[in-house]
Length: 501
Image (cartoon, rainbow, N blue to C red; front, side, top):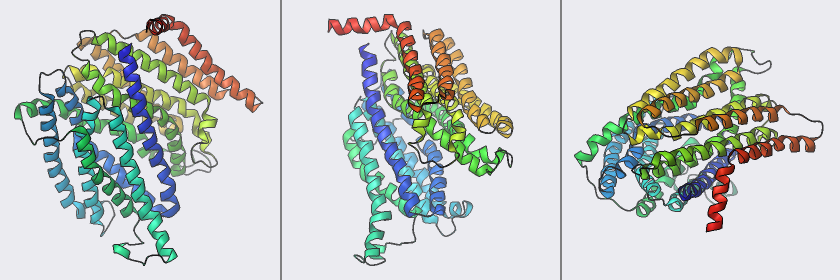
């Protein structure tokens, strides 16, 4: 129980920093839309999608490899850190230089003529991100959650400061006459340039701080460590690339597969915007999963050599399913309230009915993350690629077949079916290679009941707003009571431990 308490505490710290960082970044959208034109905002979306994809290439699974080879391999953790960081710096030098030299070609290919400097700055941003990855991973492995969270928040605040300075404050000073046009080379017609520069400055300035907090390293390329790490990491690279496909493909293809006039009065692109808004509501589940992943990955590896680790992994999975099932019900029954937290106009609520499906899809992604520990600690990472590829294929097939006939529902089902298939395959092979005594029957039962209650609460519509809110949230209380009844032995053990302490 103390292990679970420790994991829960660290997840809360990671979650707070992750939610705060993403909330601040979300609020920056208001700055971009208020001070920059739509073309610039479109450039921001496109270039940062490219950055998100290439980030996986630049790190190529070495974070997870670092966790694996720092624990349970009878290797010196400091030497593993030295080698991993040195390897990433070396590969980043080659990859970053390649993109830097290809910048003119990329500018022409992506329709940014004469703006090759944008992709040179992109190469630097990617390089800074990559050489920060392992120091951040070391902070996680060392259970220094506050140091990790603090560095992440400082990075975000620096980004906000430079964004406001370049996009809001300096233009205001120019307009007021406090400084002249062109001061220090400032160009008023720049937009996406200043978004990239703010990111570049923030990442560059945080490097010394993060390296200091993680502990400086000695450059070393130990071939005896690199060879098995490469073998372990490369499947994770392809898993990451396939995972990006699973995450983004529905939003990328939705507008192109939806027939004209499928939704009267809406173009396919407008319908895709409504679909995307509903996806954002479901991201609330993803925040929890991301926070859990930050804390759980080093935790799982740290316990991998414990003879009782399978039982511990099963308890973690059970607690995760319970917490996320309750969260799914709570969000689903309160979508009318949650929906007002997001920028919205007329018509966005028409797709809210798919949110419980998306929430279940992301919850299954979290279950998959729990299950995936078997191939990470048994060095069978080749399975990660094939499982994720299977999910990507299923996702694309469902999108192409369901969106033209089901619209929003088809897009949501692609997410749900993708992660359901990945979870089922991972569970099947995991129990063959590294059996873990999961409470499968109970966990599946919680998921099914939570999904049903989510839709009962979503469609519940009473005449009185107050009564409606009370009735919807009574379903959350009812679910919690049922879980408490099913887990009375666990609750009794917790209370017993508290009395003893």
